[in-house]
Amino acid sequence: MAESGSWPSIRTHGLLSTSALLDLFEVKGKERLTIETQCRSESITIRHPVHGSAVIRDQKPLHEKTLQNLLDGMSTEDYYLMLNQKTFFWTRRERLERLLNARAYRKRSHSVLTVDTKALVTKHQASIWLSHINSGAAIYGVGRRGRYTFKRIGEYPFEEMRKKKKDKAIVELAVDYAVKDISELVIRVEEWIGQNPIRTIWERKS
Image 1: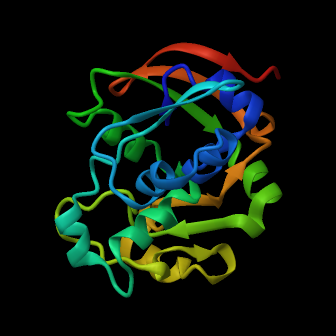
Image 2: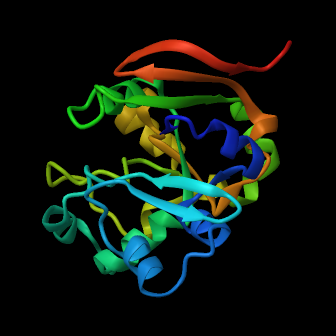
């Protein structure tokens, strides 16, 4: 799930984490510190003389006070920084649809990328993390979290999670910093409004 209209930039530069995007746009100092270590209640637009503009998405589902009560061994600032250094993928379509149908997003257009999971894991396995919770949401006061939330593929307790959560054993897949070759891994790019795809922006040729 990406900002509407962002596919041309993603295709050129790759799928970038917030930190990678700030590097590309040469954002430094206090502005960068604020973006990386504080909760974004609204999306932020950044600009660059060469790269144009880009939107850093909001973090509305991360309720600050709730998050504080869920963290183990980390400050909220450290947690936001950890998230901002990763790119994220939903592992189940239903999670994507639930987010796109949330009140804050359902009337807006979004770009949705469908990725070849096998190719992604084959190329980036050493940089991949798995999570059993939605790390970007802290609404209902459940889901304790910290640095242990993310585990490498070989360390992930898949069988244990599958016994507890069945086919929901893995909620998120994250990749360190950026997926620069995302254009080689994408199967389809669509524009969605709410839970409904309304047009295909790009599709891999068979």
